[in-house]
Amino acid sequence: MLKNTVGIAGTLGILGCCLYPFLQLGVQYLLYKITAFLASLVGSSGLCKLIDGLGGAFGLVLGMTGACALLLLISVLSSVGAVVP
Image (cartoon, rainbow, N blue to C red; front, side, top):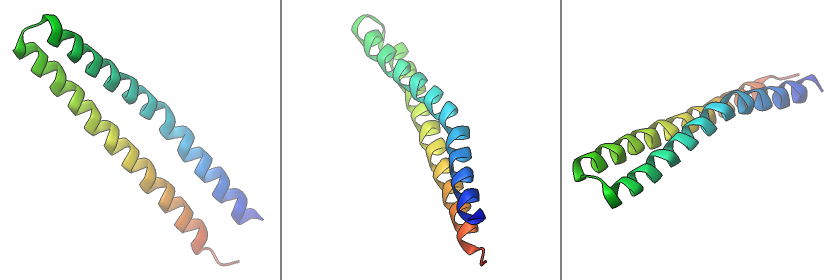
């Protein structure tokens, strides 16, 4: 019983800790991509490339955040599964 409780609480805790940064980075990524699109309509090409590059960088950070959250979930589930009652 305790093993299941720790597994569920650990999983929900990791999801709770990773949700806010993931959403924040996702919103910033979308804003940079929208800004790059709007800048391409009226702006210079150098500025558009810069903004699009920043959006790409936020996309990479977003992917790394998701990968780290997945690794944390796997580590909690494997550590709880390794405990033998």
